Image 1: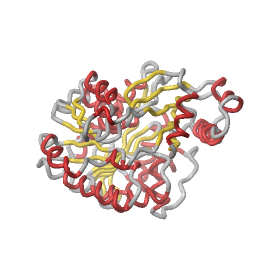
Image 2 (image 1 turned 90 degrees about the vertical axis):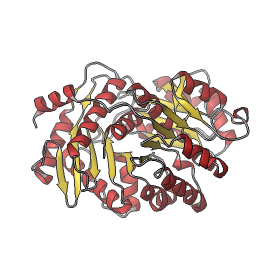
Image 3 (image 1 turned 180 degrees about the vertical axis):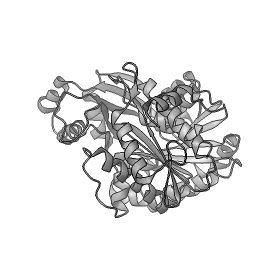
Length: 417
């Protein structure tokens, strides 16, 4: 398809039919803070000891225009960060489960349940106000403190981008390490929980980065498999995050990802799993065509390694999905990506979005390597189906926080795989 045909598809694509859905488990309150030159300077002169790692990681995120996350292990250490940024930014619902729940509600899914085992009272109130049904567990919500994460949004221009990097807005997250129980429904409450979500055919799940031991991962994987049994059409999706240590990535690969139907991640997160799997180094990002081809090959390798029916990768300018060959109508999976891309562009704001030239060039290269298209945007890579769509980009993006969760959750619930 040429650009005009893609634009027609974007204009005409329809969203999914309403149905009950559930999200879990990573929800919190976000403090959104725009990065400015004075903020960067203050990290040098005013922040005090302990902030050097934050500044170095933030600058790396800005130079490479990529999302990243810094996990703080001690309560006292994170309190210092909260205190430093206390008077900056604004508070909103955050965490993958909450952001996905709000987006699903916005596109008409109903009812939307957000399961947060240790949700605090303010978080539950904010979810209800947004039209979401919160579910938590324990002796009383008053005993669960509200958890705040720091989201540092940065735009091009403050630091020079690394060679070959396409300048774009992105964010850097500073978050406390949650207790592993935040991602596992208590054993005594599991039966009640499964009854509450028995009407749902889609479960968008996150927060597994907080698990630590083999026992944590085994328990969470068992629960994930049981969620898949509550409805004849149930499909589960695990959304990945950045900043994980290799040992946690290995446990994710061993336990969580093989237990789900669908996996969502960006190009940086896909690269982390590729390295753990022993895959080849990716070419420089300046070579758009070779970069896109590598992403397809890496996503196919991840699908094979985990057995997932669906692997969804989102990056600047295009989205792709790797599907099991038994999927009979891949054009509907393509339309789900198109619908999600349109939703994400609208959420980003910043003026009328236009199809990314980089995305269109990447699509043409994928056609030359894996084509011809079986139908527009649908190819074969060995035994796997490849869906590849160029995406619209707004000229002046106003929001980056949660865009990955918005597009990933939208594509997941809209895809009838």
